[in-house]
Image 1 (tube, rainbow, N blue to C red):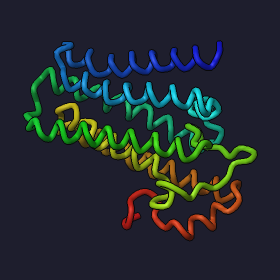
Image 2: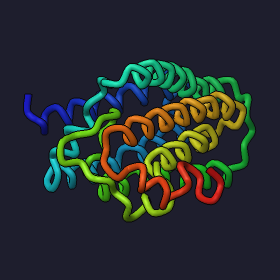
Image 3: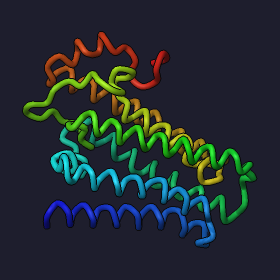
Length: 221
């Protein structure tokens, strides 16, 4: 199967899985926050992947890899996937049961933050063509210190954390926020192990760390 077909299949599969996690627990398609979240997640992504398919298909190949090569990362990502699945079921249950009574402005603001987090991950992919989904160092890979990498060493994780923290609010469910917060320590473990691998295998990465002090949160950590 060619890259274009695999990309389309993966895109449809992701849309179907996320839609099922949102709407089956909700028990209804009249969950407008779920539709808005799907639009925020997939419409920009469709345009972005079309762009990358034309201009950098190798980046698409890297982003489609899921099999981790580092043993520690395999364990971490197993917990991430489990926590992610559980967390995304909860807002739909909240919608069905009416647990949260959240102001509309918080929902809209949170949807904007989710969009901003997603846009950040796309910016990172544009700047760093070696931004693979798995932790690995490839032949010819260089340290990237421009764009968002001037601010923090892991800007893609920063965008992902913003998305996850505001996802329950974007879905109108502030009561399920703790479930999404639990994903953040797993990301911290992942990036710490990633830095260990990069310092060992990627030339000049240790020096880059001395210039860009903050890992994830500007001026904090």
